[in-house]
Amino acid sequence: MERKTKINAEDDKQELVITREFDLPVDLLFKAYVEPEIVEQWMGTKVLKLESKNHGSYQYETTDPKGNKHLFNGVIHEFFPNQKITRTFEMENTPFGVQLEFLSFEKLTNNTSKLTMHVLYKSVALRNQILALPFAQGINMAHNRIQDILSKHQK
Image (cartoon, rainbow, N blue to C red; front, side):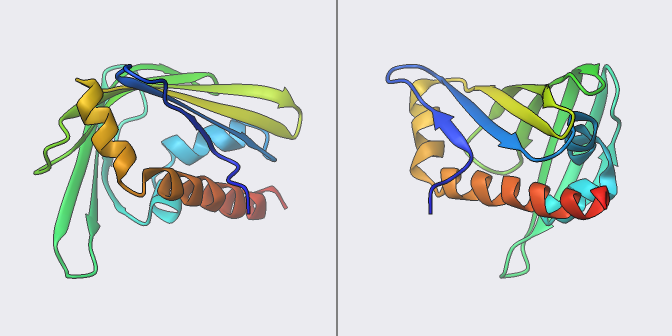
């Protein structure tokens, strides 16, 4: 089955552009990134803090199958409801460092929308390490969960 989430990774660049069209209105798609209860559902994580505003921050915690806890956090630099979020993202205690994410939410029709994520890494090598992981499969699965969970909210 074809993945609906597309990842564009040009050679010798330290960035990715990830796009996905959803059968969801843009305001509902935006909620997937700003409402803690929804974030927890599609990310399978616990939201410890989520300040959805300019200069806000967030922290998530997940537990792997072996019972180890992992923290993810960042700072929200720009926040424009139903339009865009600019934020940092960091997985603590990993070699991956901080990445910068530009999330754009676009209304296509009253019932469809598009998410574009422009992600910048410190280096090309670091970006390539991320791509060597099951990253594409994971983000596609996460986006599928957003579609499934929020489709139920529409009804």
